[in-house]
Image (cartoon, rainbow, N blue to C red):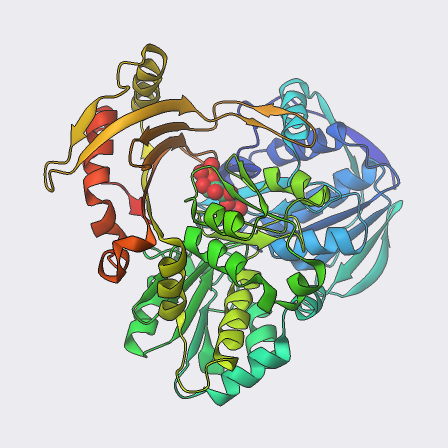
Length: 563
Ligand code: VG1
Ligand code: CO
């Protein structure tokens, strides 16, 4: 098998974002484009003689990309590839496979929740040996390589049949095709109390209906194995669980806007426990009849109930963490349980170091990402099964009253109070306007012109006094690396907070995210605590829009998505 050097020229903009390189499929399909990025990965790591995992959410262009990685990887000396059957591994499953088989790293083919298909998005992400996304020093190196690349290496070998499980030789390398689901199901079985969940669901087959919606993303086969085969539920407990390369034309993002197939079915069929995951399986939404769990609350509630989960009972909970824009609900749990807790920049890569150092067990992001140190990615089905485990355990101690999602929410608020939280996304706005918005807030930040100013909500007359403005900066407590400009934060004297950030996962234009949080203590009482988030946050949102002049800069009256 001869190794060939192919001459190429650099492409602009191959900078990995919050979670890998994401672009339109058509961009990746340009001659040499994907090859350049893949060779730049190999130029930034030392994979000679090593094992590499390949897998992804199966979106359009994945089969082609797997073959490209095999060719270039083999030519660059990779000795063994572990590949999910048909190139499929959910992001959490890939993280697990990297760890379990002690691979050197993995290349994940996904653009997560972004739509797929010939006119939509594709993505490539490199993960390191702990199973987590490559840290910034690695992604910076990859980007630098893409700017100077002049050749890439390939072996000339016939394409590998990705549909046959088993090991074959491929040029100088070995390729092992593995079942995409098995290892992951074994992992979850070792974490949760499957028999308890199964028994609870069986006893309550009439009054506690379950529905999981795969949104035609990668989780379909995983959900089938868990809900049908392990928990013994009927076919009607899963929907949209056939993975499709274009996600059936949908937007595989588990939130109230895009997961409407779940929302509709939950309301129509009185489903007590509904859940959905995104294209690559790392996000989750928990949604039951009249009960929506905001992700910031979800992770806090899992932390609160952690000792009902066998994995945490055995390992203990070492520490808690959230990304900066995520509400501070989990901080309250950490304080009460006297645990160490951390605030890190957006994106899962920052949690990994803390986990590797044994200081972090449970963490989450407001963007429907929840997870733990069982792997180094957020994990959609893990969170869904965690909720089922917690509900099954809570009901074990409540023989006469069925405890549902809402009961856990209300109980949590009565102990800790509630952080009302919402995120407004302004997608694909002109970059110019986004930059002006950032500059406007930066100006106030440097000059102090907004400090101590009072702002009144037009509709409710509630007054908010700005107490501080700052740019969030993170110093990693383990490797001491510093990440600057991770979001602009405006704090108010009542403890409320508004954050502005530019998205790092979009494939076109700029996306501005505005995060708002307002806390009410338990003494506010049940009525105030059980309001909808939009009601609880109305006045703060008005003030945030006024202070930032967002509508003016972006030329948008309404956000694209509210979560
Ligand atoms: C978004 C979310 C962030 C998440 C990231 C990857 O990033 O805000 O919390 O970690 O997506 O999620 P950004 O930079 O667009 O705000 V996923 O499910 O792509 O892997
Ligand atoms: Co995802």
